Image (cartoon, rainbow, N blue to C red; front, side):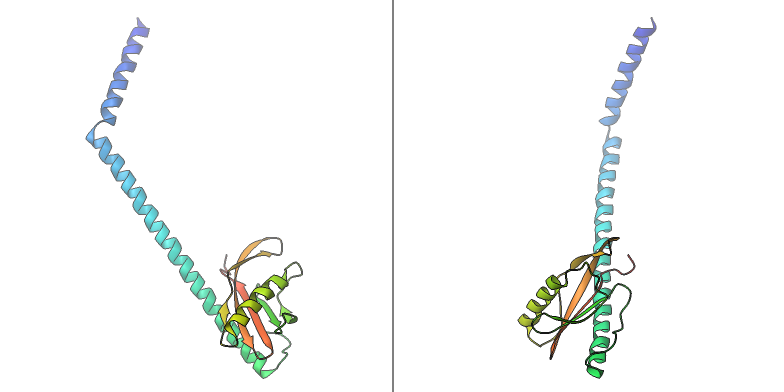
Length: 171
């Protein structure tokens, strides 16, 4: 009777499977896999957050360098024809009431009023003491995708300048 032999073979394989699951070798493999998974997760998180910090620092350094060039251009001429910007950079010069005096790299769909309101709040809080970073902002990149921007506010005698750049321009 083949059915009886098949039944006993199934019972025998189940007994073997139970013995394997309860063996010390199987438990050691499970512990090794779990510890390896945790170590890889921790290492991956460390690398990810280190890269985010480094990219953010580089973006802030680039933005500060560009702001220095803009301030130099504004000191040379109160209303320069253009300022040195890259493809996705944003430049907005406002008076102390929040009216836009000049802008470059701003698309029609952007709500400059919200950005100006935040910058005016920061500039009024700090006075004319120096530049400050605005909270990180996501801006729709001409309908293609959203880009993470960093903005700096630099108070001037006649208002202030907002300069923005993508967090990761290579993204």
